[in-house]
Length: 159
Ligand SMILES: [Cu+2]
Image (cartoon, rainbow, N blue to C red; front, side, top):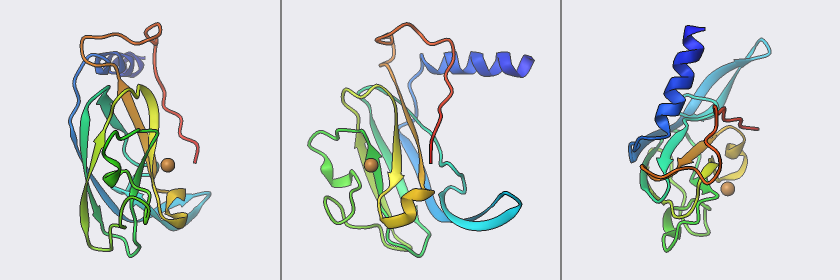
């Protein structure tokens, strides 16, 4: 019960703070166990689903991506409009070259009017099947939600 109260308190607290603007993503193969079997999958920071990004509406984020896999990869910031900044939005071979194995790339994410939960995912062939996570965009500090303040929040990611 104490843990539940603590978690709820933490979630409510997050709604009123400014978040870090820099994230570090290391794309690598990770061994995971599901249904009694181990399998190697591509992950970010060894997590599946990958790390959640927390941000405020209108902020700019920098995600330092290091590709430690043996595949070309990009990360797409799905649902982010990226005004006048398509060059690090992630669609591989369309607006961005792939991040090659052993290389790094600084992805700039410009949030404009997005608010709520969107997501990021890998953008090269099958890699998107395991390389993804949530982006939770809170109101600007000092402003309120455009709807009644939620009692709690639980991100659900369908992969
Ligand atoms: Cu997408």
